[in-house]
Image 1 (tube, rainbow, N blue to C red):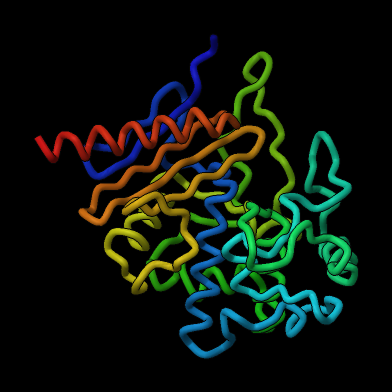
Image 2: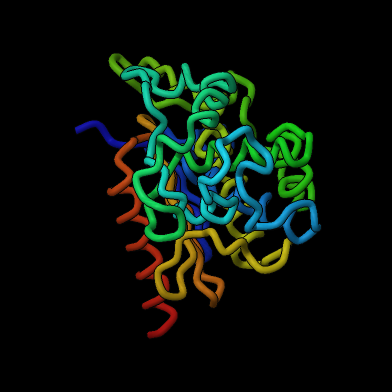
Length: 279
């Protein structure tokens, strides 16, 4: 079996990159984009630009009465399905542009599978709508919101929706040729379209969850007891990051879309570090 390019960064050891990974080239981080989008939401709410419980139809032309709020979208409790309809097989999000999102918004009352606020169902569609609502509320592009609200205050420069092609690290395919990545810079961007160098993604984890340089972390990270965490995966890449209250943290990125294995590696490493501290 071909080895999987992997990088590991954490609070216990020096960063590692093995089997062709690179700590300083851009990789897809998939749904690790979501807590970044949620951080933008939280900071805008703290600044009084909007409220977490504002209805979605305040910002987008959704039918009135859906009951879906920005909080529901961020917490995956909107009742919306996981994915937008009519995705392509090879490059699923390529046709999901601003026009496609607008069409969905105008018939949003036909899409929910449950009433908002009653159950959690992970939704990429929900975060695409959340990003569009933030753009509408501020009159600012998603990329500019990201820079102003998160990246510039933290001094992070190597997280981007569209990094230079020559600095992208792609999964090797047959005969070692790079596999063309999914198109994720359209309407799906706020849900999973960012690229980052592993060093920059690790810096983001430390700044938001450990040092808390922007204040209390957004409540929309995933949690398991005291652990705050999130993962992300595309067809060709997967990432896990998490931090504990004592400052223990890890970030693992692999050029493989097997998110379950990446999660297992990350949780295993966190457990190992915590046990070594306790001994």
